[in-house]
Length: 358
Image 1 (cartoon, helix red, strand yellow):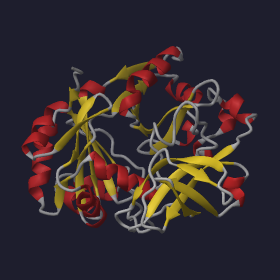
Image 2 (cartoon, one colour; image 1 turned 135 degrees about the vertical axis):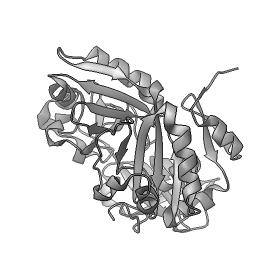
Image 3 (cartoon, one colour; image 1 turned 90 degrees about the vertical axis):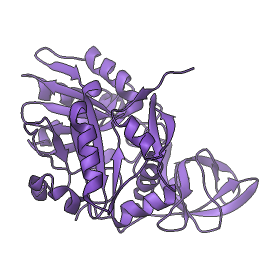
């Protein structure tokens, strides 16, 4: 039998009746009630996620900035103290090893990577480490809560009044308890992510949940549907080592002139596909792996993520579609249980009422 890791909140999840599933080597809460109810609660009120399975690294030293410029796709020079930056790491061929967020915490940088890639990325960073750079994996010592929803600021202010000054993708510096609070998230709503030592996470979780009837625990099931409604990429679906950031629609975080590892290949690459956002108006649900066809029913792509949008009550999907069809066509066909349905290209985000900039 496989042994799975447990976050410091595992017992709390059990007590709350969560459905626990294996996810990235951890037993994590998929849901506490119905996923659609949790999804709508985050969209309208506020939900509390345990995402302590994520990996956290510290990078510091005289050459920390130069090192991060070498290994990440975005421009680290733009990342000022108290700010966060979405970025990626590529291999030498330009394939995406991971996408993640970096925080500039003044004395050091904190990298928060996808749980499934924690070991891979740490080894990659070690392999490419420069002199006068210290790299430390603190994942086992840190927990991470995401409080997401239009009422998140209101709930959190009574605990941390200083968050009132935070704008989107800004972060507070660590307080005396080692807590870092950033205005970041994966839901498309106003929200905050709280990084804190394992030793105090249970107390914080319990105090938060008892502070407001509007705050409910929510699981990874609705985290996925929330991010899909925003068109946010998920590693292992839209992104992996066979995908480069240009075809994945991540040119905006790919600064080729910084000379990061993989940039030479990307400078000369000729992509033959593109990530496209699609809506299905028929009463059918697009799923990951379903094939996309042109109107002559020639296969031209596949769905990477799909499902029924709880907010829109429509089928939505992200899909890689071959060029030039991805750019020239507005309507495609999708095959679901041996039947073809029309599926149309649309602009992201699917859900346009998110409060993340509020």
